[in-house]
Length: 291
Image 1 (cartoon, rainbow, N blue to C red):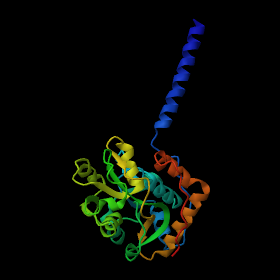
Image 2: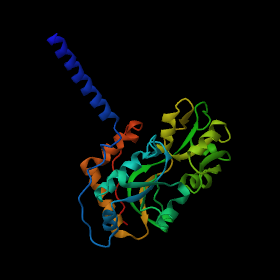
Image 3: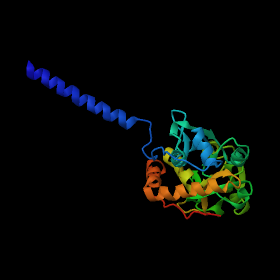
Image 4: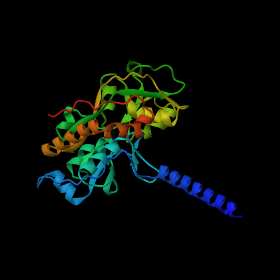
């Protein structure tokens, strides 16, 4: 009888240990984000204001697999999101104190200008036109424009193949401008890239165009429906972190953090936990443009 009781206790201990491991594995907290720093900043700087407030508003996309997509709990997940968490942590702000604001391509500059967000980390290509309105830290990643087509379509393998044809892209985006002006496609505008998928599926357009990493996320979710027209990209899209125009001190501070993330492993861990699950080649942090 005593041995039976002992055996039952052992089984209960083993079961409890297994349950603890399962719960730990299923927990929502990210292990890629550095611990919240105990930081102090010069009075009057944006860093000081945010650190004292213990909260930050970060604009990101909610429909971009791998980079920024709304999760089952209503919060966004992805590489952009992890970058935002890491920056917030360096300001002394916990991940659960971040207010995530959905931004789309056409409202990123206005949200920054109006103060509706403190930062935008949203597959946001740095270009001269945008730098007239906002400032950029980074780049923290370099993508390239590509084409998403239906799985059974072998007629399109390069951007020249869409000349005169209907291609869906997001209003106000760099890819929409490039495919129209350089490759003479007829752009069918949409509010989000996700909204382009049904027109493609129904053959109302021949392709969807945006950055390769975004399109790879859609292929990963529906491999039997879609594919990339080619593994080759036809532009360079340096992703930056958008902030208020001419806030040079804040921009320089973020740039310093990005370089530190590359050194301490934060950058690599963030990639491997998100986009790296599909895009196996781990990127290196691009050279920071300290303009």
